[in-house]
Length: 301
Ligand SMILES: Nc1nc2c(ncn2[C@@H]2O[C@H](COP(=O)(O)OP(=O)(O)OP(=O)(O)O)[C@@H](O)[C@H]2O)c(=O)[nH]1
Ligand SMILES: [Mg+2]
Image 1 (tube, rainbow, N blue to C red):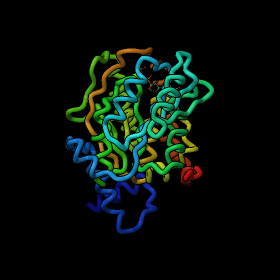
Image 2: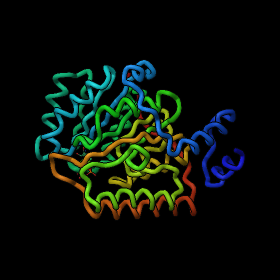
Image 3: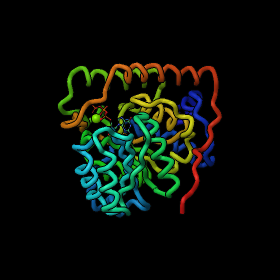
Image 4: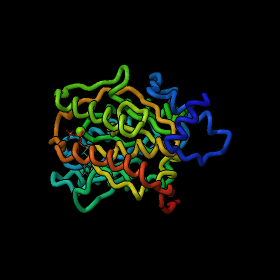
């Protein structure tokens, strides 16, 4: 046990928690990979979570998916709310989001941005919006049905149970996987996770997954304003920051389904960015320590 703790410290994990919590935190984190959370029935989950949940849904040209995905999310639990972050989609997704928001103002919220500014910044702005409004659980989720809405409850259960601070919907653990994926796509995703894991030492199998549930404490603690990466690299960087801050990550198996409608935005530049960011994070680790600063936001009553 001691050896595990020492090894984690040597990798530079900053220990800023109360002394009693340190050992179990480090060990739990290490044990939790892959931490396969049993599939909890929805009813049991809802009683075990307390506090509101916000699902951040970034959209760029998701006209065919948006209305259905929002409806599917809202039926999963009464306390789920959605924040659509639309980047002035040319296909009019923003106007659809506004209509849904007008129909259910208590549960559907919309953030409009001027132009396509990237997935990473959409999430950061969404996180800050959620922190300012006191949500207890904040999710990342794609709007194109690659992520199964019913899995939201399982992700939240992993965090609400106290077993983890972050739950990652994972393709690369037992019972997880992909459907309709080409060999190339599988190779890039699986290979990317292995590459990042080897270089950064993060004990998570699916480092590029964009289906996640964060406890608000995690997002409050991380220096969100300094996150720079935007595509796949954004997911790797968030995992890395959670790891460095000593948070526990649970991998919840999911089956990722390739988008059925809408246009793919995947491209070579996204892969290249991810590879370079991973090297950059490692270099930062080796040559210069960053002093952690908490996220900056103003509370909205
Ligand atoms: N707000 C915003 N959302 C984006 C941007 N790029 C992608 N998205 C959304 O982010 C989610 C994930 O993007 P996808 O394009 O599905 O990425 P992917 O799953 O890796 O690739 P494909 O499904 O093949 O396109 C989807 O809901 C997109 O609409 C962006 O620049 N801004
Ligand atoms: Mg997609």
